[in-house]
Length: 366
Image (cartoon, one colour):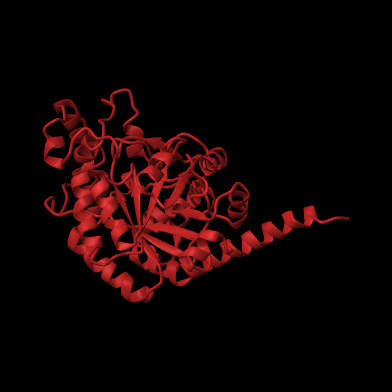
């Protein structure tokens, strides 16, 4: 799978794996791909520990760090957001806490692996970036918007490759103008923050928009046949995420893994109930409650994340199963069990080879 991007990065397979779990990140990098650590669930010190661990584990092989720099925001920091939350929204949260029997967080003052990622602000991203720069990761990904100019310039001076994640045509060229070296075209099938355009439609538009800048395809990819398809569309590799929730190394809660195995591709929904921006996630009773007639709606980011942070932290601190879920893509219907990350990588590669061979046979002269 030696696309020009794979050659440039010195990797065996142009398969990028986004995960909040450091064990998955290291396992994918060591299997010939590129693990990318989502940085939003750790405190700065926890992130420092994770990055140190990853660097020791990968022994110089490339890895990345993903940060959230929203291009639009209703507040610049958590304190400013908190004072803007109307009382009726706080009352609704109290009602949900009672309805689902959600106890308070064990430590509301501590960043939570389930709650911190709900509050995407530049202030928080800069805190995490400062820690990441102590380790000089070869790749830094910017989600929700281009990097601020001062950060871009610093990364360029360090020789760091910048990855820009986009969900619609037009966004990609803005990322490139802001210094992105690689673009991820994320279809609506993806888990997490995502737009409304399908991967099959979005990828060729983005490829044409930013050529010759390399493009990775993202959104619902869990099979080597899909990799062959997006390479045919002009992508030079793939960015995957939901697939790794079911990796043996993943630290996702067992009860949530069981829900993913039982789910079909119709069991996800795009909702603003977590962060205030559209997030594709597993449909749960808690998610459905935000669309009920008595619900007040949702607030813009980062207000919504500040509103639900303590509730979400309580859900996971106390394993409130009815309300437990995760961001996940429509490929959840293809996630049938737990496999080691290395096996997932090799299954993807073998599926890509088989699919590419079948297509090549169709082109052979009789």
